[in-house]
Image 1 (cartoon, rainbow, N blue to C red):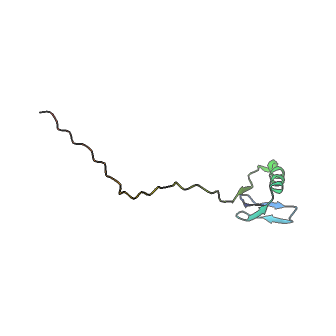
Image 2: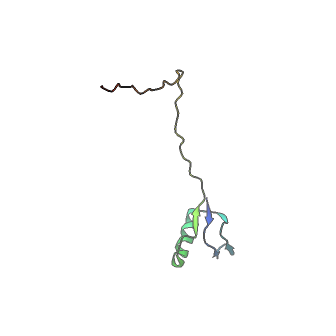
Image 3: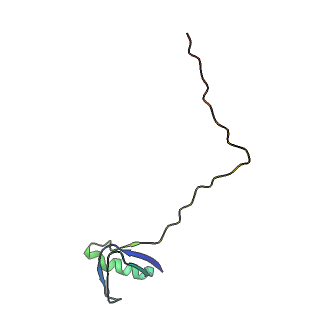
Length: 79
């Protein structure tokens, strides 16, 4: 089951209740598809996934040597 957030208010006939904006509900993939199909004639977009998507953190490698600073070379201007 996945969690979904209600974006537009609608009546859920199967659950016999009004789903209000901001409600979070758990649905099977089949039930979600059924609701999406039934609500499509009314404009669709009533639910959005509220599952957090895991984002990979960048890996920072640590070394035992201190980082060396790069310095810009000064060039002398011809006179």
